[in-house]
Length: 332
Image (cartoon, rainbow, N blue to C red; front, top):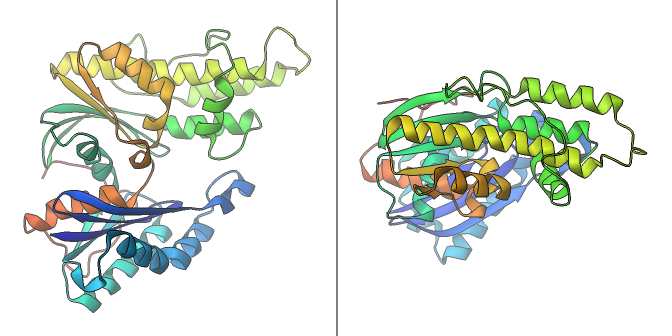
């Protein structure tokens, strides 16, 4: 089966084609316009998706060597995400499916991130624990099969990616903040400053990063660039390390509590190399799997891949389905 996937939940426009479980093309347009604002402006994001969607579909088809008539189905993100950007993608996808008289399926963005790990390793087997960590989500899931998910823990306030973005803003860095902090941290000392690590001694699997962010704000109020004992690189590295320590430790606890032999990390923050190293060290000798770098951030490939699974199983959406900005990943 050949399925076109469309992702427009935030500020990345992703289009990809999956054919018989294999991604044959994937293109992404990143909205750099938001850098001047230090964060995503929803209305602008919606307009940017609208500008490029048709072009990206053409590029994806050309890259795959296919014609639009070869498509057997369309998959599109219906949530969670920004309401306006989701609507842009869903309306485009509905029009395409209607014009071609092919089925359409609305896909859960979070669920697609989890299943992107099957693209990295097709031999991945259930059950496994997934650390889903991005700008909007920080959750731990026990994945026992398609539609058999148990939420083990989640953030009570900021997501880890959000904390990194806000921390970068406090440090005067660019957007998106995660890669900026990671780049600055490479020449810093991650043990220089002892930032707080919430719930790290509590034994539960929930997260909290608001206190860490506040701690950085207070620290920077007293920080001076003329201080020769502490550099901004040290601050960035220490802040990043506090996030990484919590994430990797709790993933290890989740593996211990569930007894699984394999863990996966999904979402945009999964691209962070410090996190990857820490998780591998924390989980050894268990297997830890990460998506390919191109599939960590929002992309159409994960939507097309999961969409093909749905459609091949006869699961399609009513053409009148709506978007859900707060869509949850639940058992079915």
